[in-house]
Image 1 (cartoon, helix red, strand yellow):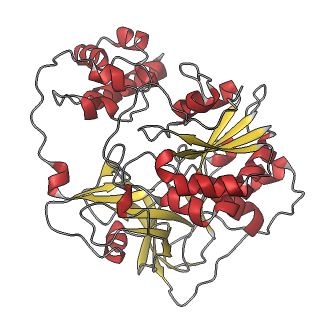
Image 2 (cartoon, one colour; image 1 turned 45 degrees about the vertical axis):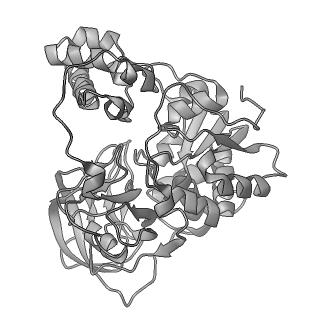
Length: 445
């Protein structure tokens, strides 16, 4: 049952306090990113089966047109984000570092039209909302990219009582959700109401870290007369926005090992996803764009950009004034969980919340790992309550039965253990390795 005292900020056990550096972009209003000359749209932008190509080279396509489709259960359609001509279909670099099937489109900048779906009426039924969310290609925009239509349609025997909107945005540098809460608060609330209706929940919470007090105050004012929607403050701490930690902090419910939020009657959605639900249902707009923070000490003019999907990272950096200095590290996402990029040709996709550019001073050469000094900082910082060093030791020795007993698969890969380790041990690397090996063992049984 939810805690009703909203005066004291909620939190969870564990976590860390890295430099947040939000001030670089938090005061920058959202701008529309100018169209690039060419976009690259990967057919794998979500958890689940990749899309199958629905167009061919030389074909004219419209913004909002489905260009990737599948009959798989866990899947989300892919739409063209621009009007233009298909230049090529084939393997292209993805932000994950792999080559994946993608559609390259030369952009027709003279045509600004978007092919939309028919808006749903105010009395739309839950199943209509769920179907529309699927048709519009919505996925989690916080980075996980899990198909939203599956998430808001719980399996038989499961029910959702509480919807949590994750406005924490705990990753350093990223401010896209903060700006959307300030600039699109009404749309966020309307999207939350639609999700509550779709899942049959009793109440909804919007959780925001205390370093965004202007968003907390604004949304509390907007929801003051709403009995079943609450705006709650949570402590500024990383990874406050991890969904299991957020549920624990606000509702004092523990998601069981190997379980999902639905197992405790909860659904957690990202701010951007919630606003996208409103756009899909009320405006008929498929997911062809998202807000991306371009920030970091290595960016000359940090911005929050409403960006068409498939836009090259190089174009986003150019719009933000270019790179300041040399020896920079460019990350798709934030510095804690993002992926370092080896090429600026990779495109922004549905799960790209930020492009973070760090100067050399911010990425000082990491010293070689040293022996563990048994300080237990990794244990204290772990928000899941794991034993990172022991998991590393067992993984190095191939003791996979023991790894299962240490609940290695419950790791959320937040990077807290590696961040706090004075010996500079690559703990999260070994835990990822452990999880992969445990998955392989499970598939082989």
